[in-house]
Image (cartoon, rainbow, N blue to C red; front, side, top):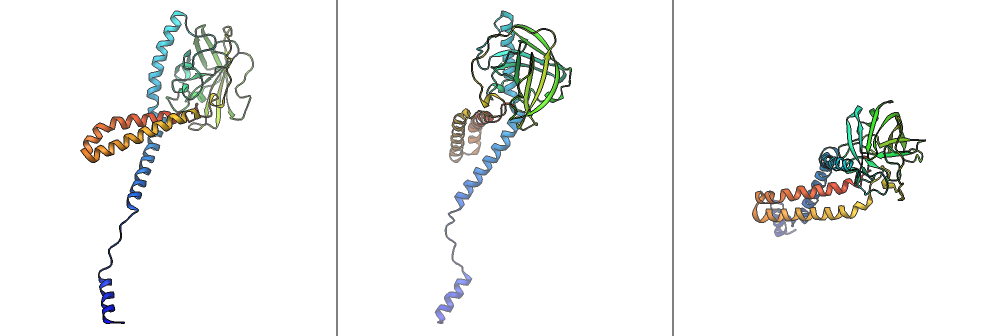
Length: 296
């Protein structure tokens, strides 16, 4: 080995070659940012479902109660099918668990964001036959959160355009999603249905109540069919396109905030972008909630 080679090796050991450009840096940073955003959205969605969703539900109930009271006053409350989806059809009161909710027409996830929903193919509450009302147990105020606490003999009151009918609870039971007879009863009855267990929707919790005294004559029945989305234990896949649009809008808002931050600074970016970010995130959460079981 020549003296020159030895010298070169010694110099290389003392002065290692400079590392090449790190091509993974930008991608790694983007991946970390994406994971952080996804985690924040997941945590935020849990908070939305468990707490914040009660805010729009409360506003909706206030408006529904005013509307239903005015319809009762002029004799315009519905007593026959068809009834417009989301329209108020009854005032449901359960004193033992502090429930006072306006029941809307329809049991899909979108309708149950406003309050308990009446299954259109069943009798209206207070009428002859079996009336079925679905309600959420956790999300959007969880109006049926304490349904399982009801005991035999507990009173339920239903007020419709035909008057007020009192019911007494005769049994509280759970049923599997595959039980085809879970939503049936003999004679005149009111079934209140939610998901079971709390925070999941693998089974149904059903309160069966019988009228005290007479009920009103049955109105004109519904002619529409029932799908899985109407039965409380599945979400509405029809909300997927709206969810994708909401996500695209949120991504555009995030990109715009980052661009403003680069050009005008972080303070200006947050002042301008924070309201848009909150609105976009809320819209995403509302659409994603419709993919969850209606009675969750």
